[in-house]
Length: 142
Image (cartoon, rainbow, N blue to C red; front, side, top):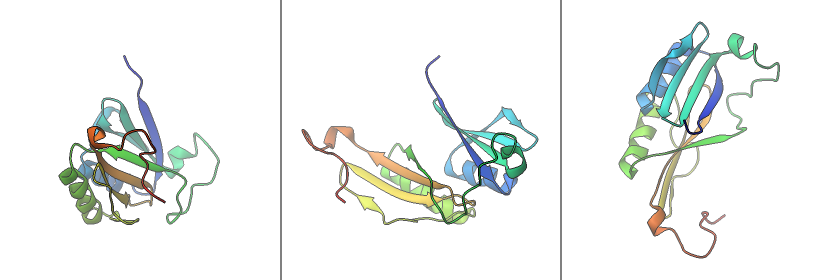
């Protein structure tokens, strides 16, 4: 078995968060879901554990960041630009927020950032690695 990433996120309303992530294209994994938490799967390597605040407190006493703050942005690679746009629309329609940052279109890379109902920042991105600039910094200009 290869490596995988499980991202744990504290959520205020587990049912609303489940509906939000399923609308973005995640699928629920019932084997890792239960009282106070649910697992949603992006692909075979990336899953999110959605945990109620009470369940979160079983893992850490560190403060839960306020909804308008950002500690990390989780970027999810999409199969095409249309999927990036669809995720943004789904975020806005399911209790989240679309385009929390300006849309970025660099030709080889297209991103739209959104927030889930609890304010967790998610980057929906598409990238054509064959079109990336060669021999230099491929990051977007500051």
